[in-house]
Length: 265
Image (tube, rainbow, N blue to C red; front, top):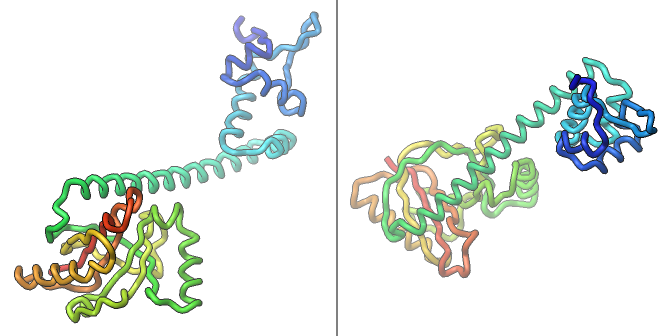
């Protein structure tokens, strides 16, 4: 008669992979207590109590406080349980999306570092890039513009570094060798973030080059890219996108690697 089997506190705790002190605590606060009183004055848990305890443990795993669980048990109903479960399922789905974004970002950074180790950093190449969406702001913004962008950035999951950030320079300035001031500062939007009021970095072919060292070497990289484009009959369009590649392992600015992408026809 396994359904009638009685369990001591230690046995019941072991059955549910928890510490018996947890059961003592739940009993003390009136959350979950043994069902059976033996003739020896000991109290025992029954097998039928297992689903009830598992529900409490699941609520705890979902981040519900003891007070929240006590309130639920004092007014439990199928409708209330359905509401709690629906809310928690929505929370879990959101967490999964956020974790997937983090995984994608970590994978991207890992791939960037591997690429930097193995590629020819002096070469100018043509690459295919996916569509991306960016929050942008003038690189020399006024106070109100800065506050607006900071408010937008605060809503992004994760940290700015994780999302990726950099600067943009118009092709008109590049061809005029006007490198004094970037046009925009950008922060990349995660794929799951709403894509409104933002800049669309188009999918397509891009001219890519790298600048190794201090930022004052970047103009030379642009000139090298311009010469390559002219030699190969390639038309540069739109804006360039500058982004650091190796901040996580940087020891000094002499090793800093900046990737520059420019849309090309």
